[in-house]
Length: 151
Image 1 (cartoon, rainbow, N blue to C red):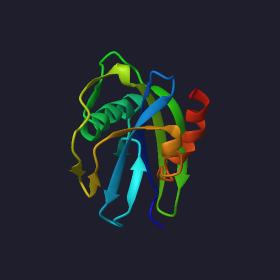
Image 2 (cartoon, rainbow, N blue to C red; image 1 turned 90 degrees about the vertical axis):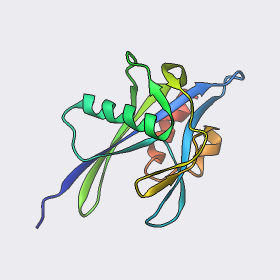
Image 3 (cartoon, rainbow, N blue to C red; image 1 turned 120 degrees about the vertical axis):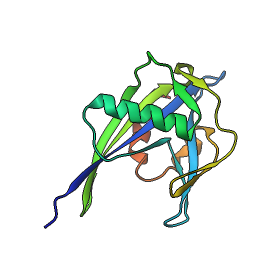
Image 4 (tube, rainbow, N blue to C red; image 1 turned 30 degrees about the vertical axis):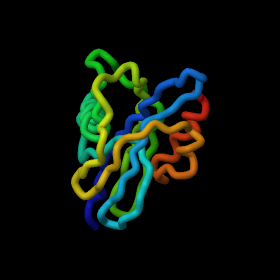
């Protein structure tokens, strides 16, 4: 029996408060070549291995820059909002979601979509929780309960 592999997924919940007090979040609609389905997700990506939490945060910064066009300011430490593990027949995946306030970022949102490996990503969009709720990818849905507490 082959050894189970362990992978890590990290995503950023980039948030800002509108003038009316409503929170909104950056999402990306993406299409994976494998099935062609349009999915809504938070910006993030997979890691094969990690050394410590710092390697997760380095990956988080890299994914935000690549998928969204923003940079987390150097002295900002994102807040761990939610983490959980999924298991299937071949692998375990630890999924972590970090909250990052838009004011703690610099740069400009991508204006156009782009390809990232085997996935086509549309341009990032700001959405309120109610707009995200029904369309969010199933692997990102567990973080919604935490987001409801802060809205």
